[in-house]
Length: 430
Ligand code: PMP
Image 1 (tube, rainbow, N blue to C red):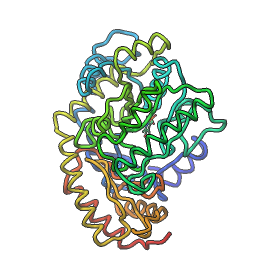
Image 2: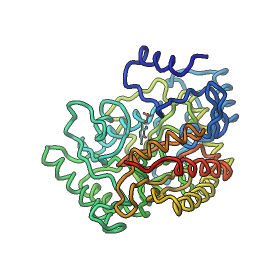
Image 3: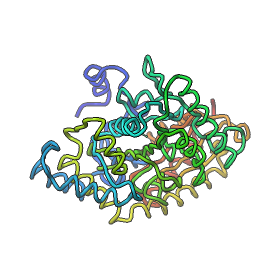
Image 4: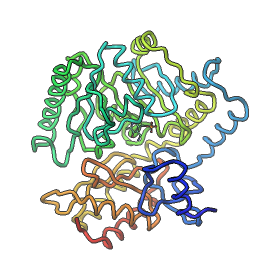
Protein backbone atom coordinates (compact mmCIF):
# COMPACT_ATOMS: atom_id res chain seq x y z
CA UNK A 1 0.00 0.00 0.00
CA UNK A 2 1.41 3.41 -0.95
CA UNK A 3 1.74 6.00 1.81
CA UNK A 4 -0.19 9.29 1.69
CA UNK A 5 2.79 11.40 0.60
CA UNK A 6 3.43 9.10 -2.37
CA UNK A 7 -0.22 9.43 -3.42
CA UNK A 8 -0.10 13.24 -3.01
CA UNK A 9 3.03 13.39 -5.21
CA UNK A 10 1.52 11.08 -7.83
CA UNK A 11 -1.70 13.12 -7.90
CA UNK A 12 0.30 16.29 -8.60
CA UNK A 13 2.26 14.52 -11.32
CA UNK A 14 -0.60 12.62 -12.95
CA UNK A 15 -3.62 14.87 -12.30
CA UNK A 16 -1.89 18.25 -12.30
CA UNK A 17 -1.81 21.06 -9.74
CA UNK A 18 -4.69 22.40 -7.62
CA UNK A 19 -6.60 19.13 -7.36
CA UNK A 20 -8.30 19.68 -4.03
CA UNK A 21 -8.27 17.34 -1.05
CA UNK A 22 -9.87 17.74 2.34
CA UNK A 23 -7.79 18.46 5.47
CA UNK A 24 -4.17 19.47 6.10
CA UNK A 25 -3.38 15.79 6.38
CA UNK A 26 -5.48 14.25 3.57
CA UNK A 27 -7.17 10.96 4.39
CA UNK A 28 -6.44 7.92 2.25
CA UNK A 29 -9.64 5.91 2.38
CA UNK A 30 -9.74 2.29 1.34
CA UNK A 31 -13.04 0.93 2.69
CA UNK A 32 -16.52 2.00 3.79
CA UNK A 33 -19.47 0.42 5.56
CA UNK A 34 -22.60 2.32 6.64
CA UNK A 35 -21.49 5.53 8.35
CA UNK A 36 -17.90 4.36 8.80
CA UNK A 37 -14.84 4.54 6.57
CA UNK A 38 -11.35 3.13 7.05
CA UNK A 39 -7.99 4.52 5.99
CA UNK A 40 -5.02 2.61 4.59
CA UNK A 41 -3.60 2.10 8.11
CA UNK A 42 -6.82 0.45 9.26
CA UNK A 43 -7.98 3.52 11.22
CA UNK A 44 -11.75 3.93 11.44
CA UNK A 45 -13.47 7.31 10.89
CA UNK A 46 -17.07 8.36 11.48
CA UNK A 47 -18.30 9.91 8.22
CA UNK A 48 -20.27 13.02 9.18
CA UNK A 49 -19.95 14.80 5.88
CA UNK A 50 -20.50 12.58 2.92
CA UNK A 51 -23.83 13.04 1.19
CA UNK A 52 -22.83 10.84 -1.75
CA UNK A 53 -23.21 7.47 0.04
CA UNK A 54 -26.70 8.66 0.97
CA UNK A 55 -28.03 5.36 2.35
CA UNK A 56 -24.66 4.38 3.85
CA UNK A 57 -21.37 3.31 2.33
CA UNK A 58 -21.65 0.07 0.34
CA UNK A 59 -25.31 -0.49 1.19
CA UNK A 60 -25.84 -4.19 0.30
CA UNK A 61 -29.08 -3.54 -1.65
CA UNK A 62 -27.38 -0.94 -3.87
CA UNK A 63 -24.26 -3.08 -4.32
CA UNK A 64 -26.45 -6.04 -5.27
CA UNK A 65 -28.50 -4.01 -7.78
CA UNK A 66 -25.33 -2.68 -9.45
CA UNK A 67 -23.66 -6.11 -9.61
CA UNK A 68 -26.78 -7.86 -10.82
CA UNK A 69 -27.40 -5.37 -13.63
CA UNK A 70 -23.70 -5.09 -14.58
CA UNK A 71 -23.68 -8.86 -14.92
CA UNK A 72 -26.78 -8.80 -17.16
CA UNK A 73 -26.50 -5.83 -19.52
CA UNK A 74 -25.07 -2.37 -19.65
CA UNK A 75 -25.25 -0.21 -22.73
CA UNK A 76 -25.91 3.34 -23.93
CA UNK A 77 -29.37 4.76 -23.76
CA UNK A 78 -30.60 4.43 -27.36
CA UNK A 79 -32.08 0.98 -26.89
CA UNK A 80 -35.38 0.36 -25.21
CA UNK A 81 -34.95 -0.60 -21.56
CA UNK A 82 -37.45 -0.60 -18.70
CA UNK A 83 -34.81 0.43 -16.11
CA UNK A 84 -34.83 4.17 -16.85
CA UNK A 85 -38.63 4.20 -17.06
CA UNK A 86 -39.12 2.34 -13.79
CA UNK A 87 -36.75 4.75 -12.12
CA UNK A 88 -38.24 7.95 -13.54
CA UNK A 89 -41.70 6.72 -12.56
CA UNK A 90 -40.59 6.06 -8.97
CA UNK A 91 -38.65 9.33 -8.82
CA UNK A 92 -41.38 11.58 -10.17
CA UNK A 93 -43.87 9.97 -7.73
CA UNK A 94 -41.98 11.90 -5.02
CA UNK A 95 -42.74 15.25 -6.73
CA UNK A 96 -46.00 17.20 -6.89
CA UNK A 97 -47.78 17.51 -10.23
CA UNK A 98 -46.95 18.63 -12.87
CA UNK A 99 -43.29 17.60 -12.31
CA UNK A 100 -43.71 14.27 -14.08
CA UNK A 101 -40.88 13.93 -16.61
CA UNK A 102 -37.12 13.62 -16.26
CA UNK A 103 -33.79 13.44 -18.04
CA UNK A 104 -31.12 11.32 -16.45
CA UNK A 105 -27.53 12.58 -16.51
CA UNK A 106 -24.24 11.52 -14.94
CA UNK A 107 -23.55 14.65 -12.86
CA UNK A 108 -25.25 17.58 -11.20
CA UNK A 109 -23.33 19.95 -13.48
CA UNK A 110 -24.88 18.43 -16.59
CA UNK A 111 -28.29 18.59 -14.94
CA UNK A 112 -27.89 22.32 -14.26
CA UNK A 113 -26.61 22.88 -17.79
CA UNK A 114 -29.78 21.27 -19.15
CA UNK A 115 -31.92 23.30 -16.73
CA UNK A 116 -30.42 26.54 -18.09
CA UNK A 117 -31.22 25.40 -21.62
CA UNK A 118 -34.77 24.47 -20.59
CA UNK A 119 -35.18 28.00 -19.23
CA UNK A 120 -33.91 29.35 -22.54
CA UNK A 121 -36.28 27.08 -24.50
CA UNK A 122 -39.29 28.19 -22.46
CA UNK A 123 -38.56 31.92 -22.22
CA UNK A 124 -36.45 32.65 -25.29
CA UNK A 125 -34.01 34.46 -22.96
CA UNK A 126 -30.63 33.69 -21.43
CA UNK A 127 -30.36 36.04 -18.43
CA UNK A 128 -29.84 34.12 -15.18
CA UNK A 129 -29.87 35.16 -11.53
CA UNK A 130 -27.86 33.22 -8.94
CA UNK A 131 -26.71 33.82 -5.39
CA UNK A 132 -23.28 35.35 -4.96
CA UNK A 133 -22.02 32.49 -2.82
CA UNK A 134 -23.20 29.45 -4.64
CA UNK A 135 -21.84 26.55 -6.64
CA UNK A 136 -23.87 24.75 -9.28
CA UNK A 137 -21.20 22.78 -11.14
CA UNK A 138 -18.41 22.81 -13.64
CA UNK A 139 -19.60 22.96 -17.26
CA UNK A 140 -18.68 26.06 -19.27
CA UNK A 141 -22.18 27.53 -18.84
CA UNK A 142 -22.77 26.44 -15.25
CA UNK A 143 -19.38 27.63 -14.01
CA UNK A 144 -20.50 31.14 -15.01
CA UNK A 145 -22.87 30.96 -12.04
CA UNK A 146 -20.05 30.71 -9.53
CA UNK A 147 -19.18 34.03 -8.00
CA UNK A 148 -16.68 32.72 -5.46
CA UNK A 149 -14.57 30.97 -8.11
CA UNK A 150 -15.40 32.80 -11.33
CA UNK A 151 -14.03 31.66 -14.69
CA UNK A 152 -11.89 34.09 -16.70
CA UNK A 153 -13.83 36.33 -19.15
CA UNK A 154 -17.10 35.66 -17.42
CA UNK A 155 -20.24 35.94 -19.57
CA UNK A 156 -22.44 38.92 -18.83
CA UNK A 157 -25.77 37.06 -18.79
CA UNK A 158 -25.53 36.28 -15.06
CA UNK A 159 -26.50 38.69 -12.27
CA UNK A 160 -25.99 37.94 -8.60
CA UNK A 161 -28.03 38.50 -5.49
CA UNK A 162 -26.52 38.45 -2.00
CA UNK A 163 -26.68 34.96 -0.49
CA UNK A 164 -29.29 34.93 2.29
CA UNK A 165 -27.76 35.00 5.78
CA UNK A 166 -30.25 34.45 8.59
CA UNK A 167 -27.61 35.19 11.27
CA UNK A 168 -26.72 38.58 9.78
CA UNK A 169 -29.83 39.36 7.69
CA UNK A 170 -29.69 41.83 4.83
CA UNK A 171 -31.13 45.09 6.15
CA UNK A 172 -30.56 43.96 9.75
CA UNK A 173 -33.98 42.41 10.37
CA UNK A 174 -34.84 38.70 10.02
CA UNK A 175 -37.99 37.04 8.65
CA UNK A 176 -40.38 39.01 6.42
CA UNK A 177 -38.17 42.13 6.24
CA UNK A 178 -35.21 39.97 5.18
CA UNK A 179 -37.41 38.26 2.55
CA UNK A 180 -38.47 41.66 1.18
CA UNK A 181 -34.85 42.83 1.06
CA UNK A 182 -33.93 39.67 -0.87
CA UNK A 183 -36.83 40.14 -3.32
CA UNK A 184 -35.68 43.74 -3.87
CA UNK A 185 -32.23 42.39 -4.76
CA UNK A 186 -33.84 39.99 -7.25
CA UNK A 187 -35.70 42.93 -8.83
CA UNK A 188 -32.43 44.88 -9.00
CA UNK A 189 -30.73 41.89 -10.70
CA UNK A 190 -33.57 41.66 -13.27
CA UNK A 191 -33.07 45.36 -14.07
CA UNK A 192 -29.29 44.88 -14.22
CA UNK A 193 -29.70 42.07 -16.77
CA UNK A 194 -32.16 44.17 -18.82
CA UNK A 195 -29.68 47.06 -18.85
CA UNK A 196 -27.10 44.65 -20.28
CA UNK A 197 -29.58 43.54 -22.93
CA UNK A 198 -30.57 40.20 -21.39
CA UNK A 199 -34.16 39.17 -20.83
CA UNK A 200 -34.70 36.95 -17.79
CA UNK A 201 -34.73 33.18 -18.24
CA UNK A 202 -34.33 31.87 -14.69
CA UNK A 203 -33.51 32.26 -11.04
CA UNK A 204 -31.39 29.25 -10.10
CA UNK A 205 -31.11 28.50 -6.40
CA UNK A 206 -30.51 25.71 -3.99
CA UNK A 207 -33.78 25.88 -2.00
CA UNK A 208 -31.80 25.18 1.17
CA UNK A 209 -28.90 27.50 0.21
CA UNK A 210 -26.55 24.66 1.10
CA UNK A 211 -23.28 26.12 -0.15
CA UNK A 212 -24.22 29.52 1.26
CA UNK A 213 -24.26 28.08 4.80
CA UNK A 214 -27.83 26.73 5.05
CA UNK A 215 -29.49 29.85 6.55
CA UNK A 216 -32.54 29.36 8.72
CA UNK A 217 -35.37 30.70 6.53
CA UNK A 218 -39.06 30.10 7.24
CA UNK A 219 -41.29 28.36 4.66
CA UNK A 220 -42.60 30.92 2.18
CA UNK A 221 -39.57 33.15 2.65
CA UNK A 222 -38.74 33.03 -1.07
CA UNK A 223 -42.24 33.75 -2.33
CA UNK A 224 -41.85 37.46 -3.07
CA UNK A 225 -38.56 36.81 -4.91
CA UNK A 226 -40.25 34.03 -6.92
CA UNK A 227 -43.16 36.36 -7.74
CA UNK A 228 -40.69 38.96 -9.05
CA UNK A 229 -39.02 36.36 -11.29
CA UNK A 230 -42.31 35.07 -12.68
CA UNK A 231 -43.58 38.62 -13.26
CA UNK A 232 -40.47 39.26 -15.36
CA UNK A 233 -41.19 36.09 -17.40
CA UNK A 234 -38.48 33.91 -15.81
CA UNK A 235 -38.71 30.40 -14.40
CA UNK A 236 -37.43 28.91 -11.13
CA UNK A 237 -34.75 26.24 -11.13
CA UNK A 238 -34.31 24.43 -7.80
CA UNK A 239 -30.89 22.79 -7.47
CA UNK A 240 -31.63 19.87 -5.12
CA UNK A 241 -28.18 18.29 -5.46
CA UNK A 242 -27.56 18.75 -1.74
CA UNK A 243 -30.87 18.95 0.19
CA UNK A 244 -32.84 16.34 -1.75
CA UNK A 245 -33.82 12.70 -1.21
CA UNK A 246 -35.11 13.10 2.35
CA UNK A 247 -31.98 14.52 3.95
CA UNK A 248 -33.85 17.45 5.52
CA UNK A 249 -36.05 15.07 7.53
CA UNK A 250 -39.30 17.01 7.26
CA UNK A 251 -39.70 16.86 3.47
CA UNK A 252 -38.34 14.73 0.67
CA UNK A 253 -37.22 17.84 -1.29
CA UNK A 254 -35.77 21.16 -0.24
CA UNK A 255 -38.30 23.13 -2.28
CA UNK A 256 -41.15 21.35 -0.47
CA UNK A 257 -39.68 22.46 2.84
CA UNK A 258 -39.17 25.99 1.51
CA UNK A 259 -42.82 26.00 0.42
CA UNK A 260 -42.67 26.59 -3.34
CA UNK A 261 -43.08 24.63 -6.54
CA UNK A 262 -40.17 25.11 -8.95
CA UNK A 263 -40.43 24.79 -12.73
CA UNK A 264 -37.30 22.68 -13.05
CA UNK A 265 -35.49 20.60 -10.42
CA UNK A 266 -31.91 19.37 -10.72
CA UNK A 267 -30.48 16.37 -8.91
CA UNK A 268 -27.12 14.71 -8.36
CA UNK A 269 -24.78 13.55 -5.67
CA UNK A 270 -26.85 11.25 -3.40
CA UNK A 271 -29.03 9.94 -6.23
CA UNK A 272 -27.36 6.54 -6.68
CA UNK A 273 -25.29 6.26 -3.50
CA UNK A 274 -21.98 7.02 -5.23
CA UNK A 275 -22.67 5.70 -8.71
CA UNK A 276 -22.49 8.81 -10.97
CA UNK A 277 -26.13 9.73 -11.56
CA UNK A 278 -27.81 13.12 -11.88
CA UNK A 279 -31.10 14.26 -13.29
CA UNK A 280 -33.50 17.01 -14.26
CA UNK A 281 -37.19 16.87 -13.39
CA UNK A 282 -39.79 19.12 -14.99
CA UNK A 283 -43.29 19.18 -16.47
CA UNK A 284 -44.10 17.71 -19.89
CA UNK A 285 -44.57 21.15 -21.41
CA UNK A 286 -41.09 22.38 -20.46
CA UNK A 287 -39.56 19.03 -21.44
CA UNK A 288 -41.26 19.30 -24.83
CA UNK A 289 -40.00 22.87 -25.35
CA UNK A 290 -36.48 21.70 -24.47
CA UNK A 291 -36.62 18.67 -26.75
CA UNK A 292 -37.91 20.81 -29.62
CA UNK A 293 -35.22 23.48 -29.22
CA UNK A 294 -32.19 21.34 -28.35
CA UNK A 295 -31.17 17.99 -29.68
CA UNK A 296 -29.97 16.26 -26.53
CA UNK A 297 -28.50 12.82 -26.05
CA UNK A 298 -26.55 11.52 -23.09
CA UNK A 299 -24.64 8.29 -23.74
CA UNK A 300 -24.43 7.16 -20.13
CA UNK A 301 -27.30 9.05 -18.47
CA UNK A 302 -29.84 6.52 -17.23
CA UNK A 303 -28.03 3.47 -18.58
CA UNK A 304 -29.29 0.16 -17.15
CA UNK A 305 -26.68 -0.02 -14.35
CA UNK A 306 -27.13 3.64 -13.36
CA UNK A 307 -30.92 3.27 -13.35
CA UNK A 308 -30.67 0.12 -11.21
CA UNK A 309 -28.35 1.86 -8.73
CA UNK A 310 -30.63 4.89 -8.53
CA UNK A 311 -33.78 2.80 -8.08
CA UNK A 312 -32.19 0.69 -5.35
CA UNK A 313 -31.04 3.86 -3.54
CA UNK A 314 -34.49 5.45 -3.70
CA UNK A 315 -36.13 2.26 -2.46
CA UNK A 316 -33.74 2.02 0.49
CA UNK A 317 -34.52 5.62 1.51
CA UNK A 318 -38.23 4.77 1.42
CA UNK A 319 -38.19 1.19 2.79
CA UNK A 320 -35.79 1.93 5.64
CA UNK A 321 -37.59 5.16 6.68
CA UNK A 322 -34.36 7.10 6.36
CA UNK A 323 -36.10 10.48 6.07
CA UNK A 324 -37.76 9.83 9.43
CA UNK A 325 -34.39 8.80 10.86
CA UNK A 326 -32.87 12.03 9.53
CA UNK A 327 -35.58 14.04 11.32
CA UNK A 328 -35.17 12.24 14.64
CA UNK A 329 -31.38 11.99 14.78
CA UNK A 330 -30.96 15.50 13.36
CA UNK A 331 -33.11 16.97 16.15
CA UNK A 332 -31.19 14.97 18.73
CA UNK A 333 -27.81 16.10 17.37
CA UNK A 334 -28.86 19.76 17.23
CA UNK A 335 -29.99 19.53 20.85
CA UNK A 336 -26.51 18.17 21.64
CA UNK A 337 -24.97 21.11 19.81
CA UNK A 338 -27.11 23.51 21.84
CA UNK A 339 -25.77 21.91 25.02
CA UNK A 340 -22.21 22.34 23.74
CA UNK A 341 -23.00 25.98 22.93
CA UNK A 342 -23.88 26.60 26.59
CA UNK A 343 -20.19 26.20 27.48
CA UNK A 344 -18.47 27.08 24.20
CA UNK A 345 -19.15 30.74 23.37
CA UNK A 346 -17.57 30.29 19.93
CA UNK A 347 -20.77 28.51 18.78
CA UNK A 348 -22.66 31.55 17.54
CA UNK A 349 -25.58 29.99 15.67
CA UNK A 350 -26.90 26.44 15.32
CA UNK A 351 -28.84 25.73 12.16
CA UNK A 352 -30.09 22.97 9.97
CA UNK A 353 -32.76 20.44 9.26
CA UNK A 354 -32.67 16.65 9.46
CA UNK A 355 -29.20 15.35 8.80
CA UNK A 356 -27.94 18.57 7.25
CA UNK A 357 -26.92 20.88 10.03
CA UNK A 358 -24.07 22.67 11.71
CA UNK A 359 -22.94 25.60 13.73
CA UNK A 360 -21.47 28.94 12.84
CA UNK A 361 -18.26 29.69 14.74
CA UNK A 362 -17.61 33.23 15.91
CA UNK A 363 -14.81 34.96 17.80
CA UNK A 364 -17.31 36.95 19.83
CA UNK A 365 -21.03 36.08 19.95
CA UNK A 366 -22.08 39.73 20.31
CA UNK A 367 -20.03 41.03 17.39
CA UNK A 368 -20.71 37.80 15.41
CA UNK A 369 -17.30 38.13 13.78
CA UNK A 370 -16.53 34.92 11.89
CA UNK A 371 -13.93 32.55 13.40
CA UNK A 372 -12.89 31.32 9.96
CA UNK A 373 -9.38 30.03 10.76
CA UNK A 374 -10.60 28.52 14.02
CA UNK A 375 -13.34 26.62 12.16
CA UNK A 376 -10.73 25.21 9.79
CA UNK A 377 -8.61 24.15 12.78
CA UNK A 378 -11.66 22.45 14.33
CA UNK A 379 -12.37 20.50 11.11
CA UNK A 380 -8.74 19.34 11.05
CA UNK A 381 -8.78 18.50 14.76
CA UNK A 382 -11.94 16.43 14.22
CA UNK A 383 -10.27 14.59 11.35
CA UNK A 384 -7.37 13.77 13.66
CA UNK A 385 -9.89 12.47 16.20
CA UNK A 386 -11.46 10.18 13.60
CA UNK A 387 -14.56 12.24 12.73
CA UNK A 388 -14.89 13.59 9.19
CA UNK A 389 -16.79 16.85 8.82
CA UNK A 390 -16.07 20.14 7.11
CA UNK A 391 -16.99 23.80 6.90
CA UNK A 392 -18.50 26.24 4.43
CA UNK A 393 -20.73 29.30 4.27
CA UNK A 394 -20.36 32.93 3.30
CA UNK A 395 -17.45 33.34 5.74
CA UNK A 396 -16.35 29.68 5.68
CA UNK A 397 -17.04 29.46 9.39
CA UNK A 398 -20.07 27.15 9.44
CA UNK A 399 -19.32 23.58 10.45
CA UNK A 400 -21.15 21.41 7.95
CA UNK A 401 -22.44 18.10 9.25
CA UNK A 402 -24.17 15.98 6.61
CA UNK A 403 -23.67 12.27 7.25
CA UNK A 404 -25.11 9.27 5.41
CA UNK A 405 -28.78 8.96 6.43
CA UNK A 406 -28.47 5.80 8.59
CA UNK A 407 -26.58 7.99 11.13
CA UNK A 408 -27.73 7.01 14.64
CA UNK A 409 -28.08 8.81 17.98
CA UNK A 410 -25.02 6.96 19.24
CA UNK A 411 -23.10 8.16 16.14
CA UNK A 412 -24.27 11.69 17.03
CA UNK A 413 -23.04 11.24 20.63
CA UNK A 414 -19.65 10.10 19.32
CA UNK A 415 -19.40 13.16 17.03
CA UNK A 416 -20.51 15.54 19.83
CA UNK A 417 -18.02 14.10 22.34
CA UNK A 418 -15.14 14.56 19.92
CA UNK A 419 -16.39 18.06 19.05
CA UNK A 420 -16.51 18.99 22.72
CA UNK A 421 -12.86 17.88 23.03
CA UNK A 422 -11.78 19.73 19.87
CA UNK A 423 -13.50 22.95 20.99
CA UNK A 424 -11.88 22.69 24.44
CA UNK A 425 -8.40 21.99 23.07
CA UNK A 426 -8.28 24.50 20.19
CA UNK A 427 -7.46 28.12 21.08
CA UNK A 428 -10.12 30.55 19.84
CA UNK A 429 -7.78 32.78 17.85
CA UNK A 430 -8.36 34.65 14.58
N1 PMP B 1 -25.08 21.80 -7.50
C1 PMP B 1 -24.70 21.86 -6.22
C2 PMP B 1 -25.54 22.60 -5.24
C3 PMP B 1 -23.52 21.21 -5.81
O1 PMP B 1 -23.15 21.29 -4.54
C4 PMP B 1 -22.76 20.52 -6.77
C5 PMP B 1 -21.51 19.76 -6.40
N2 PMP B 1 -20.87 20.14 -5.26
C6 PMP B 1 -23.19 20.51 -8.10
C7 PMP B 1 -24.36 21.14 -8.43
C8 PMP B 1 -22.40 19.84 -9.19
O2 PMP B 1 -22.53 18.48 -9.15
P1 PMP B 1 -21.44 17.55 -9.87
O3 PMP B 1 -20.15 17.69 -9.13
O4 PMP B 1 -22.04 16.17 -9.80
O5 PMP B 1 -21.33 18.02 -11.28
